[in-house]
Image (spheres, rainbow, N blue to C red):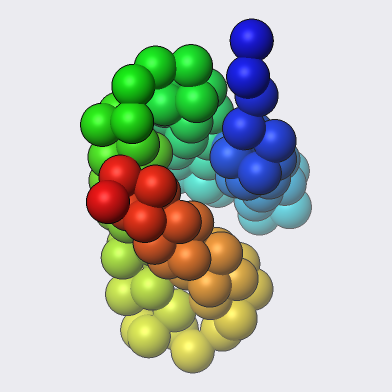
Length: 102
């Protein structure tokens, strides 16, 4: 079985970030979004790694949505942590998967 270590690491980072956001500021939204996006990234990256080339659009779309959401939050708050960092990581990840598709 082929593992996408970069995709798995990014998915785990998102989950850990959501849990940390919950523990630090008692933010249920951080916990839910971290768990949902982290699980989606982890599952779709592994699915894309073990299936045909066309499935790399799945993690690309999830990363793009996450990057756009967090990018807009960064533009509103002007705080790099956590929104700017997640956007900075998610958008290149989406580009990575789009390039795998094409």
